[in-house]
Image (tube, rainbow, N blue to C red; front, side):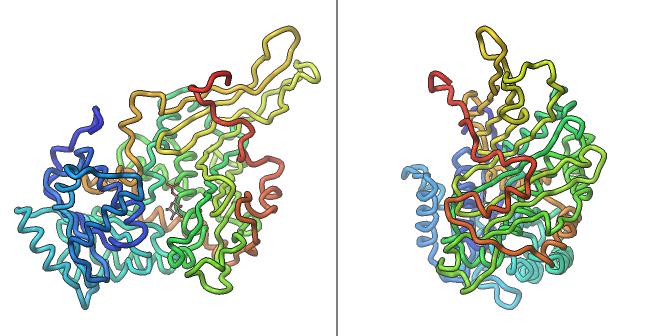
Length: 490
Ligand code: BG6
């Protein structure tokens, strides 16, 4: 266990029920995160994991599946670590609906008996959004909603109408306090660095407004394609998968007003209040794209017009941000995989610098965040080149979490959020009202989307993104790479 982390002694016996346990999301993210929590000693002392899916998979085969999934995430448990973990992993097959609960009820009855007392249930819905309503109803119908918390993957609904219908079902079965709508970008350690940097440091707090900020970019290009999850992706697309979920939440983190405290209610409402100031997206300020070859991916509908790319200009109509464009961009099969927030500062008058000094020549000063698990930050500025005369160069101050002794304590986003859901901490989850507002901001775009333009895999997307951002320019690809302290001479 990392030196400074300790198991929460209040965490009672817990059964973690993973719906969609053999699916892609469980394999890539949920199971590895759960295993890491176990290894770090952060799970409750007594726990069991019960996977659920449509197939009839023997417990032992499911354990093999879990071990494979861990392997693919680079986790190779040694026998002595694996055995005590695997013993607590079960599979309940046959699906789970109101009419037919499969073997889940029997398996849970056994699991409860094995743990004793009245263990809490944490249901994790790692299933496509269309399955949320039915599983929620079934939880109510089969008595699995009491002493339970339910974690919903995103997107929470696939349209404003389906959101409302899902929300009604959810609230007919569960209290809001039992509901955890996940957006794993909020769980990234680096996302929390954003509000810490700003609210703990007068220098940044003072600069965080339209007087000093010229524009903001939230840019998450991905090299990844959609091969392993074609069905989910073709029904979802970049706008729902990333824009109205992750990118909007990160924009809210950047733009929120200072909360009264860092408690769950205050932070949630600070994020959601600023979302209520997002101007509804104008389709003329959005570029959609699809990478060439998308339709040939097995599982993608012939002739699909689904977007795999979106770039948007967002305006926030409040006193702090009026007139400051927020550029949001993400897409699949792009030139690089990055997760960048970049804040460009307004330039001061510089008439005293001689012509040819290089002042302004490399754009405005930027504060840049890399939202990787091991966060990085950089503040760029103009400085004098040593020697006679006045020549300016763009320099930077950089911080990398990797260089600190705390790097081992960083929890990956899914680990953090699974742990928070078990502990009943809502700080990094979204509320129904907050999500409803996100849908309102996106309705115009969803109803009248701009044309989906083709782009080449390995590129930065359709050309129209440059007009969208003019007179500014996309920060990526960076002109200068992040400094590596272990490399001399930079
Ligand atoms: C997921 C999306 O929520 O986030 C994926 O469904 C995307 O399409 C992923 O690749 C990106 O997350 P991260 O943490 O890898 O940047």
